[in-house]
Length: 229
Image 1 (cartoon, rainbow, N blue to C red):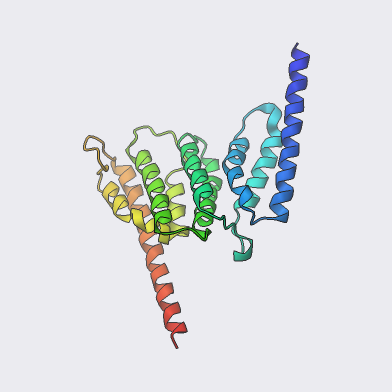
Image 2: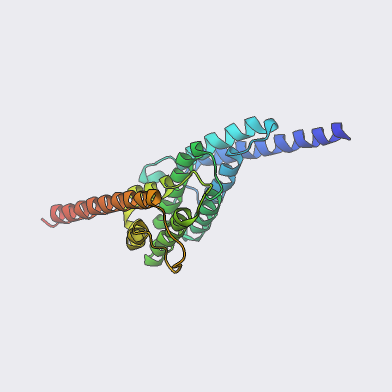
């Protein structure tokens, strides 16, 4: 029986490796395909696998997700027909991030989040509500981290900080909320509080967002002046 179980696990591993090979072909041939968006979070989960028999699977998944979310030229960026698929994946990512206890995964998770944000905003049907949904997702996740004593996640505050740095226009909607958290106040819960160390982290995120948004406004203003002549 043990031999049969081992054989089943080997067949399953082989099957999943071949699926990753197919995904890699799609990713390299069509890096802008919206079909890739739903694979981001599952690939991250595979990359976090600790099963000793899945080392090859973990390495292949990690390599593939890093390829998928790396910054690209505009022509190769993903632009889904609607932002819903990217928003759903982003929500799944935030849920995943709450339980990540290994800090080494923080950069790739933050990079994946930014890639999903940009995919959602690049959709031709994206509007103001898209940005509002995104800033609410990040605001909720950041607030949960700040107000939860003994929070396990090692992804924060990098996850929120990278979002503010790389997508300040979408992040600006959470600025007032971050300032409120920096004061130690939790929205809608007078009993909850934020300790001094995490209040400093909130101030750092607010500073990142303020600088990023100010630079964006200055850049837009400069472009308008240049092209108005």
